[in-house]
Image (cartoon, rainbow, N blue to C red; front, side, top):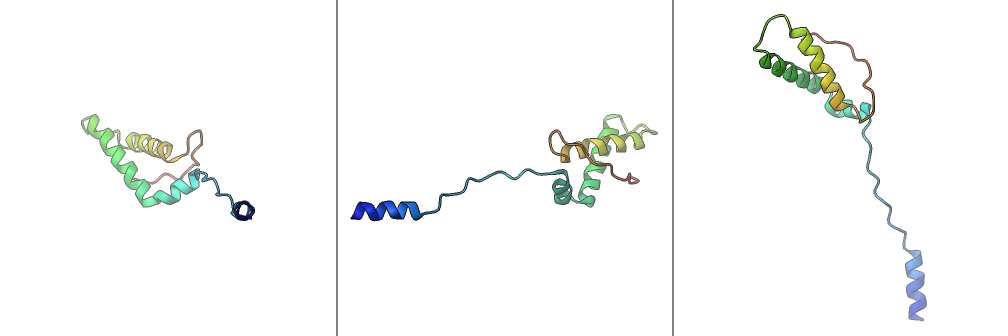
Length: 90
C-alpha cells in the first residue's frame, strides 16, 4: 500500500517548469537604458573618437553620428535593426 501512495503522490506533483531565457528586444533595451543614458553613452564615445584624432576641429558632427550608430548597434539585439531616431544636437 505504501508504494501505491508514493506513486500517487509522485503523479500529483506538478512538473517543474523549464526556465526560458528572456530575449531582449530593441524596445526593452532602449527602455532599460533610457534617452539620457543613451545620450551620455554617445557623448562619451564621440569624445574618445575626437581624442584619438587629437581633437582636430571640424569633425564633431561626424564623431557624433558615428558614435550614435555604434551605441545603437550595441543596444540593438543581434541581427536586429535599430529604429530611426531623431538626431539630437551635441
